[in-house]
Image (cartoon, rainbow, N blue to C red):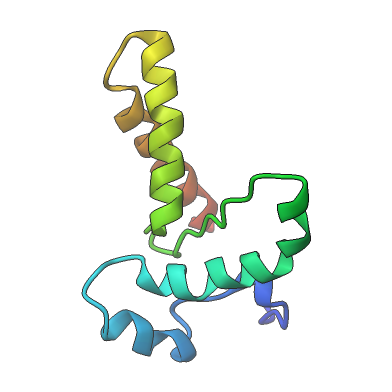
Length: 106
């Protein structure tokens, strides 16, 4: 597979991002600083007409802070409709499985 010159597919395991991951105490910081910022720049024109959340997932399924906040809010709303407080946890689990399947070569 050829590496992409497109910044939209930021590889947070790339050498340029390893310093971010190794020097920060919290998981997801590389996703926060790299991919999320690129998305903010790319979609800045949408801010006039849409609410935009720069959601970023690392290859290891770590989410940036805004992604966690967004998924938590969606889960909270599902929980209130379904009247089951576990719905947020189920949503995070489904996302984790889906991301794992996307990374699998099989």
